[in-house]
Amino acid sequence: DRETQQLLTQGTTLQRILDRLRRETAHKQHVENTESVSKKRRHCQSSQIALDPDATLRSAWNLLLAVLLVYTCIIVPLRLGFPEMFMGRHVRLWNGVEMFVDIVFVCGVALNFFTAYKDEAEQDALVTDLRPIAVRYLKSW
Image 1 (cartoon, rainbow, N blue to C red):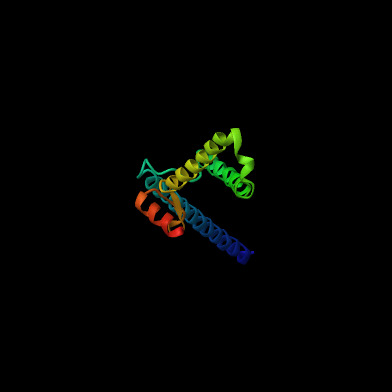
Image 2: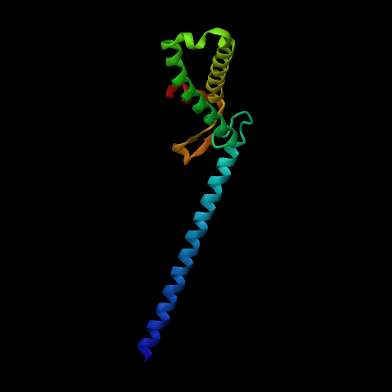
């Protein structure tokens, strides 16, 4: 009976130690996560010019570029193979559409120089400094 009582006391003590270690580990992870989020927010606020790559506006822009790319893939071969289809009274309309597509693509290239990116080396911290953004974009093409 005495041995059982002693084992129960030791088991309770071990349980308390394990509980305390779990709480300390959870607290440490919470502090690290909080510091990481804080660092990301500070890094993101360093530039008001850089655009968030996950923003709804940027997603809509990417969708527009995708639609215009499909349009270009269809229309350019048709214009080259059957130029008479694009002549006549609608020639100004087609030229206007082509000019619009070209302007959107040029703006898309320029926009990439102002779009932040997530740095995998720094736990997906958002890089908003324009110089590293430009260097990364130029190296990727």
